Length: 130
Image (tube, rainbow, N blue to C red):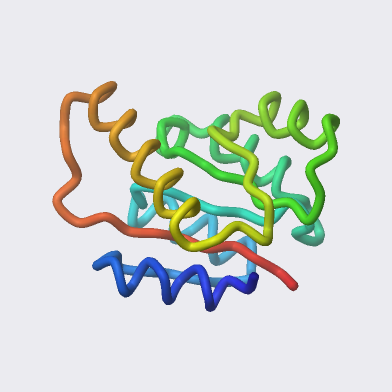
């Protein structure tokens, strides 16, 4: 599933969507807009989604933003790498709309309960390369 499809699902659900395949742009957007959730493909180039997630985790301004990684395959090693990188979940790229939105809302509620604050406007940042 392409980032455009996932983005259209979120826009239909009332989210503001930012989408780019450029990692430098994405890092700037994450720091500037502080999205409620980030989704990154594990196949990003020149750094993969695991490394991108670690970059966000290692910066104090972005370390609390939940990151979901999207993978073409469900290898055990991929799940371990996602966990070690600090991702909240590893999603299969062929995920259906209902399950995708369930996962997103589950993690937004966890963040809300953890921080004690609800974000007024959720922003979604998609970093998929296909």
